[in-house]
Amino acid sequence: MRPRIGYKKLAAVGVAAVVGVASTIALTSGSASAAPVYGYSGYAFGTDVQTGLANSGPQVISQISCTTDANRKAENDLATANVNEQAIARTVKTDTKAFADERGNGVTSTATAADIKLGSLLSLTGAKTTTTAWVKNGNLHYTGSTTFAGVKIGNVVVPSLLKAKPNTKVAVPGLGYVVLNRVGGVKTESGIYSYAQAVVVHATVKNRYLPVGVDVAVLKTRAEVTKPATAMVMGDAYGTKASVDKLVTSSPTSYQATCQGTEGKTVRVAVAELNIPKVAHVGGVYTTKNGRIGADKSDVNFTSHVAGVKVGNLSIGAIESAASASKTKDGKVSLNSSSSIASIKVGNKVYPVQTGENAELEIPGIAKLTFNQVVRQSRYISVNALVIDVYSLNTKVVVGHSAAGVIG
Image (tube, rainbow, N blue to C red; front, side, top):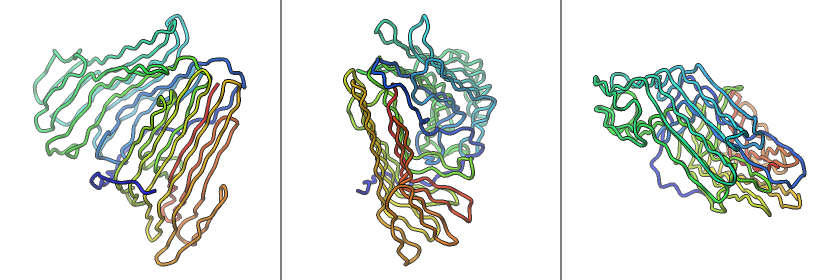
């Protein structure tokens, strides 16, 4: 099924010095015990483009995707976050840490930057944002906050914003507006997640730094913890991702992940057509996730849908994948995956779509195609519907990724 695209066509803008990418869920196995477990996940990003720049994914990332290990942590530091070839945040440090101590069971995520700057329009120095979510004695809690050492809007110093109230909106002449200290927390039937963002930049007028209509979150954190359950559900999905060797040149599109599930609701994330600069043109992309954790059963399902991909003369039709995982209280684990590709052409020549897992097709001088690339472990399964190795660019494009698993 092809996605219905109601958005305007997006042209992806190159991003310099991307440091870190949202990684695929780590392969995890575990005990067959049905004892209840806590789940921990969270992240801290230097910057995250929320609209408009389709291949500008999160930068300077510290992330724990989903784990039952209360000692898990991730750190990233001394980096510059760039958006639209502009160095927006400098000397960025991020960390995400799980804990199980006198505070309870939870996660803390923190991000700092020496300065956040858009020319003479906006200057924020000594920025720090943090959020914590935790469970103690069955009760759910969260905190979140942002502080600055200095705030300047245009040429005006604004000391009243050093400890801005939550969700403070400030006009920035020549740019649009910013929201400082954006914080919040959401309790679900499964647990709690909290978020904090030092500043969200909204470009609403023409300027030299960001295209009109683009929103950029700078120093973005999230902390998430689940109540005890039969198992944690995990997984992720995205439409496309491109890399040269180990360097990601286009971040995952329509990316989704989970640890708590979705309380049985289907969550859909979509982007319109986009370009991976100098590599490929991608049709509309959308992903879905649906999952639930509980005392009797935990399950999750991810899907990925891409309208089509063009790489030079290589044209590939609609691409889809799906992955699901579940565990019952008696310890029974189920894993499933599927993928499909509508067609493959080079000019007027039609090539057969290979079936079976990890099947390959060589197109001399153009690319190697790997179909239905599957990885399995005892409690985890992932599938890439198609992997394109583009010879002339030394570039790998993953299309239609879905993964699912259970922990505990």
